[in-house]
Image (cartoon, rainbow, N blue to C red; front, side, top):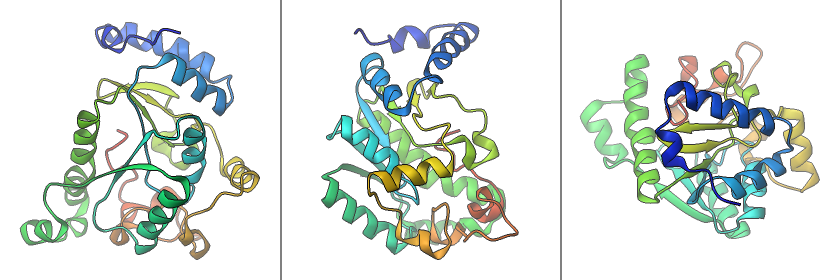
Length: 243
């Protein structure tokens, strides 16, 4: 089957592009996640990549995608401030699943950033936004460009936050296809999938973490905060990668 022509679609007017994507998403919403992935592999342009935070429930999409494309590049953005358990979890999965891991980082080291800017995460929304731009957004843009990416798979889900409630399975971001196969999954479905295939949660799951990022801006969930408030000190949810 011939791939959708990304260059042609990017030349559509905004109205034409919206209508085009709405029609495809209407069909994708009726498919299972596995069939969505098969559709994407048959219809969307190569090169394919999967981004992963290697967070609490990241095993689901890692397992799904690599079962179809074992050698797909897995883009991981390393801020230098992740939990030690996250780094060890990645090491374990790379070895166990033979993952084609591609690590990208900011040009400026974490120590150099602190010398230049101080602890940006302690400087309110503006500081957090600058931190995310340096450590997440710019490295991801570089990764997409370096790997000549045409289709980007990611594991975002609507149930994770209000900011993800209106996302679509297929969209175009930074002029490439963005594909979210498990967008409509809830935590219960994630749990059953992990149990069915005997997959692993991130080791910090048992300690009360439901969403993981950097040590300095990630909190355990409790009765006073929602899942989205466990990230970035409750100031915001998105880091900019998916906005």
